Length: 361
Image (cartoon, rainbow, N blue to C red; front, side, top):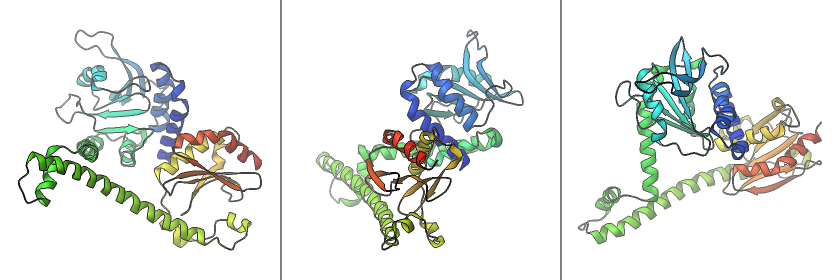
């Protein structure tokens, strides 16, 4: 959890500051160096751990530099090439990584713009960097499955053999997921043919294939919606049961979280809730010590408190429903829910959040 908190804290910083970053150098200072130091745990000011502007002459290319090299025992382990935030990360941006990967001892290389990180190795041919990454990280859309693999790259847990052994599976699973996602929006002919041949007994003429293209696309969309609705119904059912427990209680009693250990296993904290928490934490730390800002999840809402005290609520995130809300408290601890459509909109309530935290000082 500590690693994930560092990751989401950096994500909150990217959301808040990305628009102000205009150059590659500013991107490195604001986002990439904190990723290397805070998230991965390397000392960016120790050249035996992190070498900036790493030089390794390759053939006729003399004096060419790679942005960062992460070292261990005097050997290059990871190469990092940076672009300005917002720039797309195409493989043709990685020409230096390709050259340096071949002549150094590095087995991992990273291409990043400070928000998106693409991780490469040499699965296809020894000592030759693959053209496709085995892992991608988008700080504004963190895939929970990538977190355990990222931990393997940290200084305290660095295990290149484990990373490489898992890279093949990660690479192909990632590509399969992208193909599946593409089929949901625009199924190709072979995909449509698989389903049409199993439910239609006649000849698969062009007219029939055209008909089944629309039917397959519609069925995929409905299936996905059904899965989402089932999860929402389950979440809402838990929320309603939790809310009923407060009926007939006083406002003061309702403000206290009852002891209900039997329900702990029903509380599911989502990545979105944790990212929302870190946004609130990044905002409120301007007026109180960040260590005093804690989160407490329940079946009906995700609470953010000062001093881990239910009598000091900062806000509540109501994300267990199709329409998301942020609950803001006034001086009398009355909650007003405001609809939001994205996590970025939490920043619109920065003044209110800081004001609420100030009530308890």
